[in-house]
Amino acid sequence: MRLIGFLILFSFIFQTAMSQKDNRDLEQGNKLYKEQQYEKAAEAYEKVLVRAPKNAIASYNLGNTLYRKSNAAEAEKMFDATIDNSEEKRVVSDAWYNKGVTLTQQKKLEESIEAY
Image (spheres, rainbow, N blue to C red):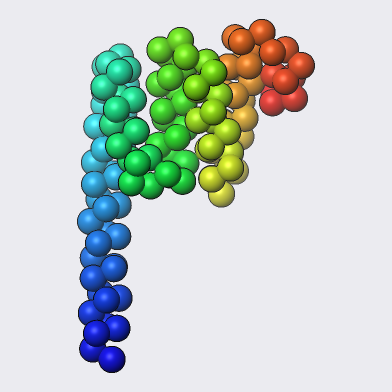
């Protein structure tokens, strides 16, 4: 019984430590994005996604960063990941809109109309 309690406690501590690291990397990415250091911002967001592939905020922010780096096709994929993984209506709505923008840039007009 003590072993199970220890494993649960260890799991909780591990998850808390990882989420704190994710938050630091997200904050770092946001800071770099605001400074227009898009390559470094993308690296920070990618670090989060390696640890937490379904982190909708990291995928959304990476999508915006990739768009700023003129990589609309990869940005579109990140917005799709955000749509698939977020439960927040506002985040999903913003991701659909941004996906529409990337599709327009790629001259995929029919798909962009559907996204908007």
